[in-house]
Amino acid sequence: MAETAEKIRIDKWLWHARFFKTRSLSAKVVLAGKCRVNGTPVSKPAYGVSAGDVLTFPQNDDIRVIKLVALGTRRGPAPEAQALYSDLDPPKPKEKSAAAPRFDGGGRPGKRDRRELEKLRRDVLE
Image (cartoon, rainbow, N blue to C red; front, side, top):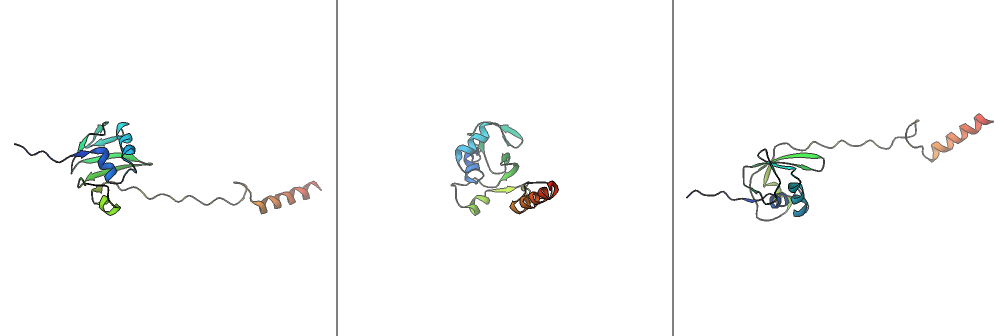
């Protein structure tokens, strides 16, 4: 008899590995057909995954490509969850947004800038 590899539901594994806050959120991503296992689209949360499979799924604004290393038995702390997978395409660092621009003809003027503009307008009108 051939041994069957251990498998776990894909939604449960995504939740165990802390990619999604709740199991129902991970199930919604899978149900929407946005998840792939070894390049094959999956649309059932009960689809079985095992160690060695490659998952591709969206998370926030990133596309994650993950290789399963272990299945896990519980949703544990972050270090334990990170040991369940290896990231094949780590997310790029976020660009820091620029601070609100000072009034230089663009953006919204501050109180001091408004007073200076009013002063200029009064001088022109007089």
